[in-house]
Every structure is written in C-alpha cells, then in structure tokens.
Image (tube, rainbow, N blue to C red; front, side, top):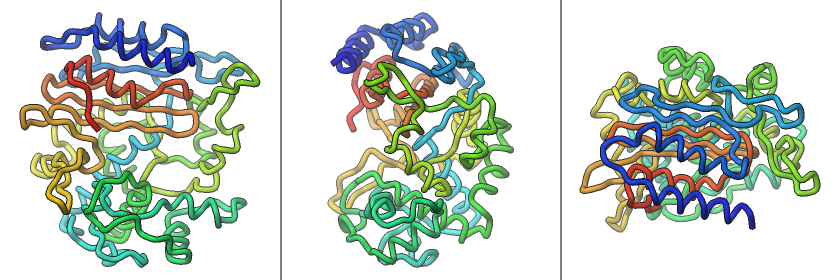
Length: 369
C-alpha cells in the first residue's frame, strides 16, 4: 500500500511543475525532495542542461548492512539501459559496411527462426520467444551460460515464434543477445573487447565495463543491489534472493544488459550521442525513426531507444533498466537539450510511473507507451 501511495505522491507532485525553457535547479531539488520523502529512493540522480551537469546528488546507502553511504562516483548495474550501447555497435558496423539493417539473421547465425532481419532485432519486432524461460527450464545452473549456449538451446528446444517478423512490437531480450552475436560475426571481434575499445575508452568512460560477477566484486565502489524483505522489515542484498540467481547462471550473456557504469560516465555517453561523436548524424537520424509495422502503423521504439514525438519532431528519447535490486533511467529531451539520469540500487521505485513523471516535468503531456 505504501508503495502505491508513494508513486501517487510522485505523479501528483510532478504534475505541479510548470515548464518554460529550462527545468532549473530548484525544480530538480523539488523532484529530489519528492522522491526521497519517505526515504525509499536510494541512488544517484543527475540533471544536465546543454550537456553540462546542473545538479547531481547521491542519496542513501551503497550497502545497507553497514550503512556505507553512496557517492556520486559509485558504479551501478545499468540493466536494459545497456541496449542502446548494443544498438550503437550495430550502427557502427553498418557504417563500416560490415552488415546491413535488412540482412537476415540467418546470414550470421544458425537459428531455427527464418525471415527475421537485424532491423527487427533492433526494434523488438522479431517475434522471438524468451530465451530466459528456455534456459531456466533446461540449463544446468551449476554452469554459467553465454550467447553460444543460449543460441544452442534455442535450436535444441525450438520454442515457437510469437508472431511473424514485423507484425507487432514486443520487447525482446532474445533479440539483443542475437545482436551481440551478430556483431561478433560481422567484425570478427569479441563484443566486450569491441565495446571497451570503440566506445568506453574513446569516450573516457573509465568506470564503465561489461563485468563478470568476480570483476564487479573487485570494484570497491560498486553499488550493491538490494531488495525489500518483509520478514526483515528492510533491504537486503538482492543476490540473497533465489529470484536473482539467473544473473549468476546467465552471467556471461552479452547484448541485452550487463553494462555497469556511473552517472557521469552516462553523461559522457549522452553527449557523444547528441553530438554524433560515435556515428554520423544520418545514422542517428535513422536510429530515431519509429519502426513501421506490417499493418502500416508505427511502434514507439527506434534502435535501442524509446521515442516520443511532439508536433512531428523528436521530443524525448529514453530507456529504463530493471534488474534484481536495480532500477535505472536515462531520459534525453531534444526540445530543450536536457538529460536526466537516475541510478538506483534498491527495488522501491516504480520506474514506469517515474518515467512518466519525469516527462511531465519537461512537458505536461505524459509519455504514451
């Protein structure tokens, strides 16, 4: 009950914000006061204008057990915010002529599903079944699965396709596993090595990586994910819950998640995308186009990004992430050149409500998705 009340308070409070040209520091402070009112928000919030930090604050604990406070430089699991990085790799390889968006997946990978294009994977219009369900039912969880294992199990158990490619939009982690494997086939390089060399190092994202569990444990300022335990009447480590085990036995997958980063590193990423430092303006413009479905209608998803248009112009792009103990968000406003980044390491926040609420700060019209 308190969580529903918390979200209602957030949404009501955010509706009160009027907006002229800039959100402004005072409004961001009011936002922070609202979402921290019942002391449930735990994480880092960063707001930037014109690519420069206007407001940044760390709130709560890195680890609840010893009450070690969070710092703005702490590293968080990004979860599905990682997808835009995977999409960018594909976009770079397309610019290099190593693949085309309308190439069929079977050109690169042996899968039992035919007629699916790379564009379908990028835009979640492939109809592919959920790989995690198949792995959960059949994988030996004493081992750690990678992309090759996932593809092998899709072939072995061949769960039926959900719909014909391009028929509709349905969010698919499976598609982004395949994208990372396609990237490796197309360029002949390991996906993690490629991301390190062509994205993280080039942008000076010194705290960003695709880390194994052991590598995460070695990062002293890694914000540990927490989940609420009613029996403890408080937050405990997410990895103490059986529901989090998949992060261990699927710990070597690439593409749909696994990037960990800081708020400031994400701002570097945001600036690079805005200023076309990694791919051309023309390439980004195509990434910002909603996918046209078979019936002529459009989805609200481009290449690794949710899209919001206003007056036929791109207004907002955003993506959220949700892993056990983590909720993340990056929201970019193109109308006023603003960025909002939220990284949390507990499960208290209802991110869908927060996404809509953040959008209402920028514009009173809520996101429709």
